[in-house]
Image (cartoon, rainbow, N blue to C red):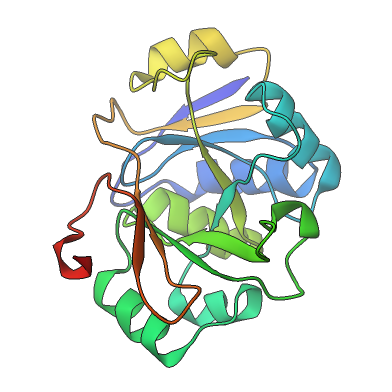
Length: 203
């Protein structure tokens, strides 16, 4: 595994570009978000996606969310109602995953049975710059031990995943919670998981 320490606010582009090249070549990376570290790949690379399932010890039916660089890009990958757009505009970038009706552009592997997808725009320059420079959304699934325990320390993550992923971008220890998940697919908001981020407006 290649390993690089980045500045969280002004990440060094030479390291971002190395990660983007790995993603473009079908690789899998670990990167920081505004909540916890994520395992990611290009959503359009089927082989890389299968690797992520193996790394996470998940069946191919588990749904992964993905990161878009900004609100403008979301409409390419999901059908966004006026209500959903207004809601997301208030909260993004931020520690939320929004469930929306999937657009045909998204690989069906990432669709739920209800034909929805989970989309994130994290408030973290490394994650957003990666997605912007790649030009495609990036899978976002938390870095955990096999039993689901979240890993926060980059050195511990490096030791465990060294032979499983191709590159890691680190910005120090992250002590966050997973994102809050809000379902906006039916014209109203439903809290699926209360995590990081204020969800009081949805009660």
